[in-house]
Image (tube, rainbow, N blue to C red):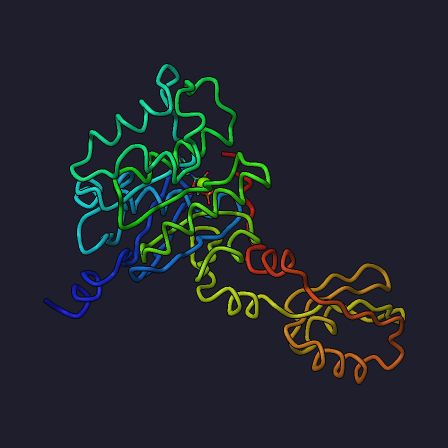
Length: 309
Ligand code: ADP
Ligand code: MG
């Protein structure tokens, strides 16, 4: 076994340079990622970033054009067949005529070592609606039933694509509470989300995607720091050029409208000192922290696609 194979064998998920195109769209470009057993990882990014495509490749629902995918050292299809992976997909549908209990029961029968259906229903918080048919459920309830379906094979890895999309704040909290009882047992979770707060609150590690690439990977604190920085707003005397503003140190982006400038800086002290030296007449200076939302946007700002899916 060479080194790469050893790592692949020990990892829960290993993606080696995976890429996927749809016509002219590069949905995923050369993503390398290793997730260790027991990690709870958020795949964070705006719509169209390539999260679902990545998830689909991990589950063997889509084949990468390039690169390799292994789950617990196996090909995705084998890992799924062995009941190692439980999945909750973004567009997953339920059979309208089946009750919740029947739905989960049906999936349990497909697996060799399922957990008792009752336990999956309880863990997903759908015991009280177990006899209701799928077509009588709210969006949030359907999501929780999908969660029960994902759990019933008693998997080592859960892969969830935007699991709380249709949930209100209350059900969201309930959902993550049931998730904790799963991760407490040392199992691995990868969830895709475009909610920054959700990644921050529930993940040990955040993998930030933009336009098919991983643009940041680390603990929540690390990713925040990376995206951190401040905004500086000020009024400049007439005649200060874009050129001058753009050459100030540590400026990551700026906008100059008439005399007003707004810029983002990764080191506001340095930027401000240089600004004061270059333009002594600068006035009305305001410095603000980039909020979490701003941090996320600054790392994902080249996003042009607004895929609604
Ligand atoms: P995310 O889940 O982060 O919103 P996706 O992986 O769904 O992103 O999509 C990434 C890009 O690939 C988008 O530009 C999307 O429009 C495109 N895409 C995804 N699936 C398909 C498909 N089946 N056919 C064509 N384009 C697709
Ligand atoms: Mg998606």
